[in-house]
Length: 316
Image (cartoon, rainbow, N blue to C red; front, side, top):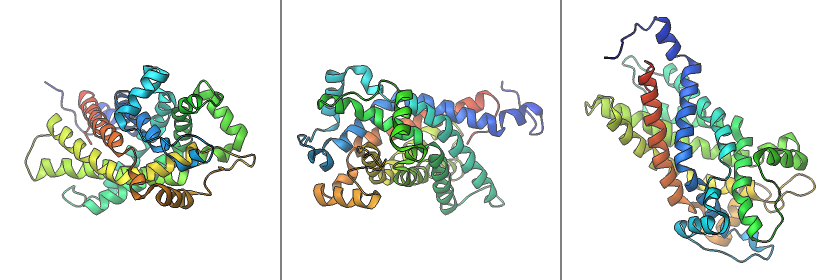
């Protein structure tokens, strides 16, 4: 039987400390990322494959689906290329996933009512704020990941390889644009994270509490899985348009002045995408994003909840 500890017991305080919850959040994210990363890479390739910016340089306009894109990557570049950019993604989650959980829990605890509940509105604002701040801090690692994910496609188009590992990407970006260049695409990146976390954190939290309080279910893996499924779907619906814009801004070439050569900014990228490819272009990569966020949320939250239970800490 599990050992029940008083809340003031040193062991209980240790397992529920900010450091412990931060670390477990990172571990859960790493597990989820490893399992679902090929969907993220496929999603990125889908978002840039028919990009009008590419046709300006004489490349053939492509229009492949998710499965064909993934198979093409595996055949032409090798199966392991489906995990290209995983290292900077681990670096991202070492910052992002820990920060967003700690920020959200502090916000939620500050606005709980007398019964310990938080409203959907409060949870949504908390998710927006936590996701925005965490992503702003971690945005350079996301830029490196996108660059590595897109590199294989550049090589197949006959362009020279620019780097072989994430360390070289960091060096290249610094040479091109300096420190501030690491935050290229940060605005849509932060917006995407805000929307995704309003779906992921808030939807998971509210769905879980509804099942526990209103339906009377126990705090088990079934509840975690149901809440995670809902969170993944809401996150994908809300985050895909910003994710498309973010990917295109981060993937564009950089001129001598350190600025992107294809888009003047987020609004220009949005306008070009809609004008040349239609409104639905903003949902390019939705299916792999959802297929990634659904299992990602499931693995992440089930891992987090069960690790916290195993070490005697509080669940989310």
